[in-house]
Image 1 (cartoon, one colour):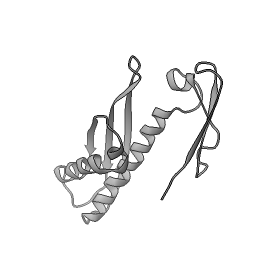
Image 2 (spheres, rainbow, N blue to C red):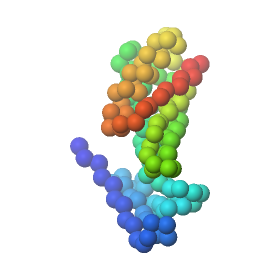
Image 3 (cartoon, rainbow, N blue to C red):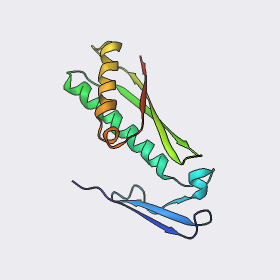
Length: 139
């Protein structure tokens, strides 16, 4: 299976503009620029897209692991907070904040073990080389 995306850029780094599109067309010529990446412009940026991909992948991995364990997943919500060091222009960490409710038959300790395993083994986590931290709120 292959997934594709396309980026187009025109102009200098600070004054130029670009567009990002995905195979699914969910992103279709979506604007990105220096301002959307390093200030408060309208559009997206690569770091935001990495965080979104990580949140989505991890949450699906938690759901899959719960299902495989015989549990029915309830509501799972993950915020991915990606830190970009502006001095070195390096992603230094990603914090996954998972909120879970309405999962019958599992205690908090078991749930946290499943979440930790998903953090380590989701496809996007395995593709990244930065520290990944997990905070779990289980109700």
